[in-house]
Length: 623
Ligand code: SF4
Ligand code: MSK
Image 1 (cartoon, rainbow, N blue to C red):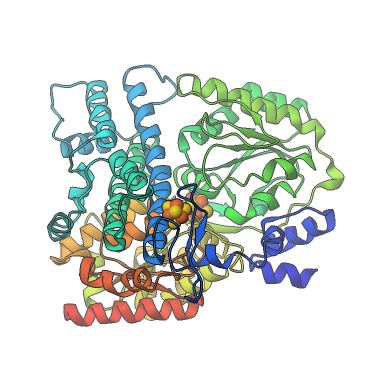
Image 2 (cartoon, rainbow, N blue to C red; image 1 turned 90 degrees about the vertical axis):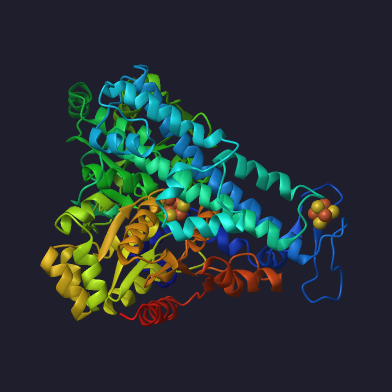
């Protein structure tokens, strides 16, 4: 039993909870993955199509049976269409998140969302200047309203450019324009993905994939960047903050509320409501020592980096958290929330509370969130958790006493601040070779990979080789739990990187936020490229997603490559059924956008690919 847990995760807290889950007869994602074996080979290769009712069709990968679907689509077309639909879904998820933040921002400016306010007005001013709509004569609310309207217009625009794409180096923008992949409006590109992949529309795999690049750029430099920037205005631009990570942050004597999902519009309010004196008093009346709000997945990143709220874990720990028996409420909004949670919650006293008008879950109590009455709804949710405390069965509480300290919250602004006001010291360290390059390591967990194994090993190998790592999403959380997000972790780095980290008092792995905050990495890459007078594709930089699983990760990977960053994937994307598509993504793209993908499940080998790429970029730059 213990051996099985060790095979599933490298995280000791998760191993402990996997053993508890087994003992309690609870089914987890790992069990369900086992029951799915063998997984569909056609699906794995990306060669099945259900895009019309003449199908479903599938291509024989050995070329002996059907080589075309009923309509005549071959493997190239089917694989490219399927990938395009994944990009569309991923870009839609990020961008709809961005849209929701923009709507709240607008309602705040109109006085319709009184629970929200401007927390970083200097940043808002900078954004307004970027949009050319700032003026000394305007009141703050007017600037906010004008900015909100200009940003909301990015979604429904018919013609570009999307403003933030112009943050990319001029050479990159020119390349996008020449290729015809400079995105027009966020929604337009996503809709066009669905149109092109309808039966009988776009049947040229290269043409389909180019539109995939365009759509993903509208995510990374559009929807995701909008989410990040406006969240900073509304909730504050992150600064380095210390906190704790892993299931050990749950407290045996307090009311535990796990906030899980992605949008800080909700979670910020839950955190605020949890310090309501009346609710705190009620918690004490019921015998609890207090109310303990903790985060999970990207909501965890958002809360930790702005408030130091403890982080309970990453994607694969959501079911395990409930199995501690110590959670009064798991409050969810959107994205990466397993539909299995209601079932596990029903084995305990845990209330699963869904909040988004877009997302309901089996077994959940739906308490719909509204930005107009945000704090009021949040108080009701926290109140429900508090009242639920009396139902906790202390005999079934199993909280692993495992947690790590971490430092999070390196926005681009705070990195510049840590460097003394400009990126120059970083550029000098890169040019001088103390830092060989930048490794952007991001992405999910996936039970096909031993939980956190890919993340931690790849990152450790990079820092050992003097590569400064920037991290977001579930990778950042794996690093937090492994103690890699601490200045003290510099002892694991090579001499050069260690020296820089010690001089600045920063960790060798910089936590830059949630999944939408990969836009911060793009901004940092653009600033470094501009500082060196080159394009992003010339930088000694590489990306990796060692345990990716979501469609959002597909969109991310594609916009990172479209931005010029070589990217290593740790799990295999469903493209191998088409030799042409595979060749284009792993080789041909280099001649088109200056970067391509590699697939390498072994994290040590994956890090080697990144290091070799970074060293060859250095040679080309003559540094
Ligand atoms: Fe089959 Fe073509 Fe219809 Fe897809 S679009 S299901 S390949 S007939
Ligand atoms: S939460 S998209 S599992 S990183 Fe953003 Fe983690 Fe991947 Fe979700």
